[in-house]
Length: 296
Image (cartoon, rainbow, N blue to C red; front, side):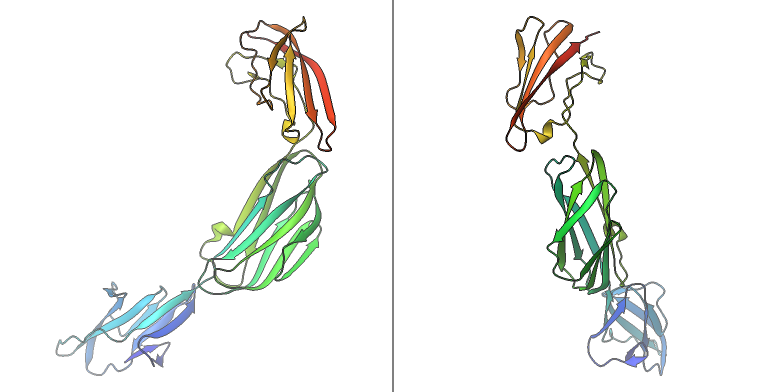
């Protein structure tokens, strides 16, 4: 007869549950007349597991063979099914894919999922908003409690079942141009075997006003080889026209400009541009200027 945690087994197999990082002792109950033992996990012998007691920490089905003093081997015993319980939490933070400029609001989605084999308890998601963002509100939260103090968002969830996923939507406003790096992380009371997915970082570029350089040098060195206009992403409805000094059109974008004009086939010199685009409110706007083309 086998013992688990020094208690008699009552079923075949007896299910034993322990928390990840813990151990349990399996033992042969009646050792009278026995001289040696061999423990098995999932039908395979365990190296050096030859005593009447075996301390287990790995999930599996455990059995033992006993050998009496006359050298006779028993059949494999009734066994213990050891289940190692853990909560594998995964958090993901993703911003809206659309282009955003200063003063515009956009959403982040924070999703937390339990990929483990037991419930996660005392779950908390922490999201520290950078100074370039202003918190504007939230939606989608139906479980737990959310608090916001000094740009720190805390989402506390009492319990998250295995394979359960919850999503929280955070609305923010971009305060200035630049790159916004934002990380959310999750913890729980249960052991987590994979800490790599407990953090999720989103990187978003806040786009500034339209900016057009005055010089391009298409000499193949990878620097200023083409005319790159920053900020066009916020104005997808636009057209670019380029003229020589006599007013002749030498380039017209076929639809939105793709940041690819390099003055191919043209002589060095000064050229003039006209950029027409629509604002988000539907009004039309145009800007003009000059570009110096240098090929050497």
